[in-house]
Image (cartoon, helix red, strand yellow):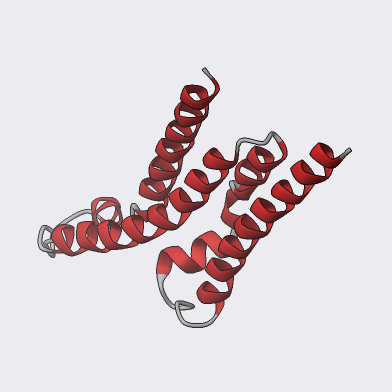
Length: 136
């Protein structure tokens, strides 16, 4: 009985950490970073429900994977925003007055969401590999 109570307490602790990490990100995106593209986009789209992966890892007692994917969300948003802005800045120099509107639109596209998702996917894979290594 004590072992089950201990497992529940551990699970709740990690759920709290994951929940707080996503809530802090959401609150920052609604206040301090409300005009920053990727923070606003991810919050408006509920992080595409990627937080479910981190929560599921907690229930499966895969706590390292839960923390890695939670950190991957934050890292992906930060890298996606910085690289997305950088790509737009570089591409803006390529725009000419005689360019087709479709090409201009393509050069002004922010790739932050794609970068964020790729970083999250990488963190998911790393989390799974870490858990697999620790269970062997």
